Length: 316
Image (cartoon, rainbow, N blue to C red; front, side, top):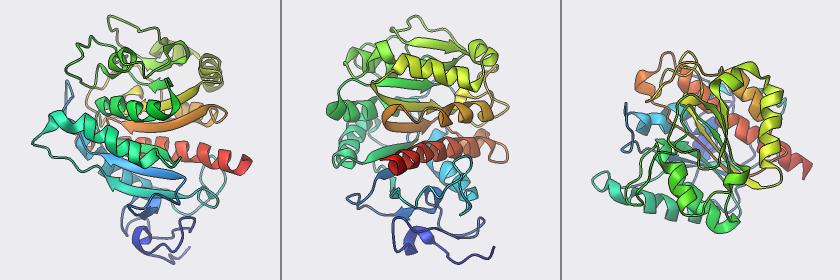
């Protein structure tokens, strides 16, 4: 149908208003939501963290937030699949833009992330973060745990991220270890999905390896997650390399033998009953992508998070 708006990210009159920008044009906020630094009236705050200085292989996920926003333009104003609804009719979502930090002082980044995240969620807002490398999840967990206590983590990844942590340095392969060390996570209710590497420790987290996921249906995977998490408050963290490189080539540390985007998105749609209080999507590195395959997958994960929140809002 003909477009009736342009640059909805700036011209929106309401946080619930529908955008009809042409898919190929207009300001690229996440799903065309209003760009604003005012979070008071928002239910969900989308935030980008363009940081990738803690990677062990290919850099480039600092461009992840841009790529995910650009790819999200394909979610036009049709009822959102698979939720068959206008996700923003009841749910007020804003795009807060990106974290400001001094790239000349990378050692300060985690404190800056934690402080800013704490401000964004102090009014009860749900924070959906676009990374960035996976080390950013550590300060995000700190900010959320300060409010909710230790959280179960639902961790989609090809890697356990439980490599040794000396308490001084942090990288994208040790955030789970650091979070456990600092009492941020409830490992007895935490689970990792899609793991295709071996780290020295499991840290007490249940693991569904890549070969497990391959042999299970989406319903079985979701039921296993729900059984592990139970009634615990939880946090979703989705490293895009959870997906097989055929579905997510644009990432820094790809590992063969992973699940499809269709399967993992189907799993997500079945987790709406969980008490999740925050979420992120990380490690999208568009320089290695082809035809936006990975960016579209990352944007779809974020869209599914919002879909679950919209369903929750309607039921409330």
